[in-house]
Length: 379
Image (tube, rainbow, N blue to C red; front, side):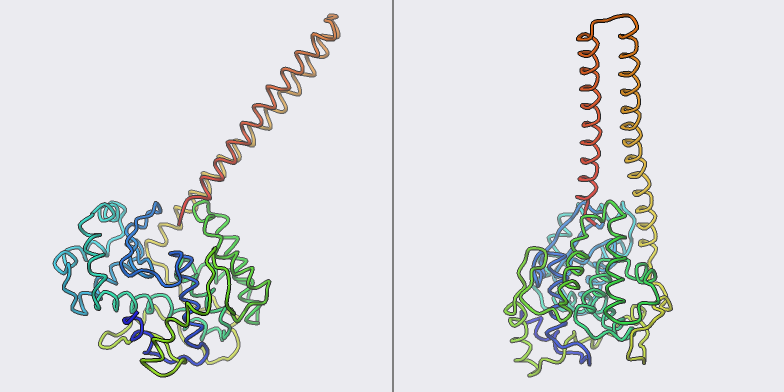
């Protein structure tokens, strides 16, 4: 916690108190790791194609954030694993699946990450990159749109962290001219978008949480609150605030000390002088990287394949019903014309109906299995 004390003391913000900024960090960290403030040494490889995920904000290879953390660690003078990291850095900046897969299997590299996490340099690197890449852009975007409510900040922050903020932002109606209306429409658009992509459906707990808070009118994010099964309470925030107060004597500032390293202004959004939300958020230039474009195409292909499978099941079920009904009708007419005993043709008709129902049940079960598999695919 000592390292977080110093990083909480670097930047004033007129709209959001340190409590609200820490709430935003805690909520998104719970979404990502299940804890309000993650583990610096956490190393994971999920079945999502992102490769190694590392640290308090689960910086990933595919996103480029892991490379940024390692590079900052080296610039800060970190020594543990230095040679290994220096050799790995060029490849960490590459997002080809074969490179990501190679480092996901490299146990020596993952052990070096865990070992470096005990150092001041690595902890500062994680906090600085996490702030620069995710929280500060969210604060800047809220400033640009004139947002001042804590829930608005968390919605923007989570979207930037999770990805595709600009894509969903550009779908929001320009008629949503008030903060609450804009944020509500944005969350609904994002929820529909997540639902439309099978591999992202399991992450709808994020938008469902925000929709519940909107429904409850919890724009100030008063604690305690249930975040994905974790009860976030005042003591989780106060534990960090107490350390911050000892260092800076105030609860109105937050953010890492970027000196002597300048932050990357290419990730920032232009400030707006208006005190009301912008009605044309599309005016901000997109921040998509090549890897985001590739994954967007893969999502489109995933949707097409899933839709084909679903429609194939539906067609099979339809034809089973049609053929079964026609067969039963033909059999009844045939039996009546040739004088087959009523009990005989009725028994045969029942047997065929049972077979048809079993087949239909099988198709429905297969469809549910596909939906379950799709929804369990992590981002």
